[in-house]
Length: 217
Image 1: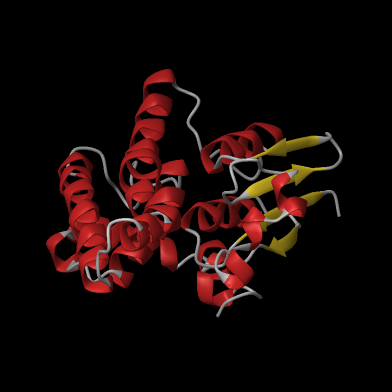
Image 2 (image 1 turned 180 degrees about the vertical axis):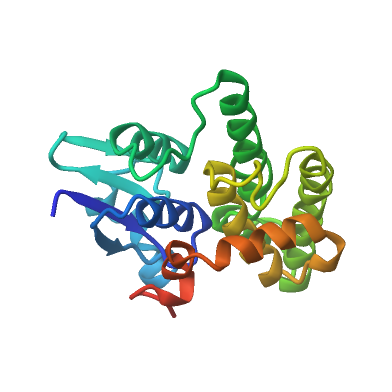
């Protein structure tokens, strides 16, 4: 199989790429990288050669002899190489920029603050308790969702942008999963919740859920 995805079942960045691969109907080999066991498999030499940043996911396309490491970059690559059955990034320049902007709101501004290495640093270097680190995650997710909920009021339809699934939805669903995990009250975000439910009705999103992965703990 020419496509491989190295990732962790609960990694939201890996989750995004699983959704995109499923929406494109692509077959791929999933290679688990356990982020906690044995000090973190992402730090071992075999994985270091694929991703020197020691993060997941890593995507490999053997046919093109390419290795990609950032989830949004991977999704855009998939969208350009496999435009069928539909594109996740609009063709129109303005709409394309808006989709990328919302995706980056999540992938660049919200999710990194609850990344495993950040939480480990808060615990190990700054002696925060598990409750304090949970509150940290909840705070920053809520700050991000406050802005996204307002923005969606002018552009949302069935999904983030009208009635087509885009990269924005692919990023939103894993972030809602994280929000629920950290105890965010999602009744504060009716538009985000509605879009999440609409996405979860699709098989591609269901198959990508963390609990449905072979390495789920």
